[in-house]
Image 1 (cartoon, one colour):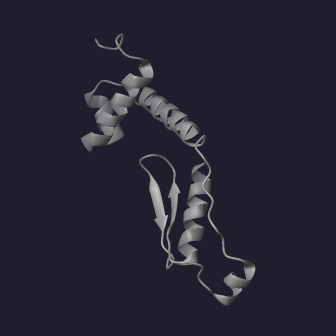
Image 2: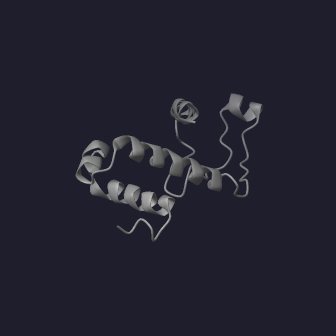
Length: 114
């Protein structure tokens, strides 16, 4: 096949992209393409880890956090949303009117994912 012409990582990136565009379940896509489910899972995790390591080497972004006094008084410090970039494809934007409990739940979910 064409596997010798490109690296394994490039081949798997292509396969994973094809899976994502297919709309099929992971199990069904692997069955149709005669790819072991375990191999797909391994490469999916490996490429996601490499992608996040590359993304983490970018320049830091700083955001002003409200002071304790501002939090207690309920003051809002600006109207600009906060954007969290997890990867090139995943961006979370939190507006100034977002409920605190939602932000807390989001941060817990992200922590559990790591």
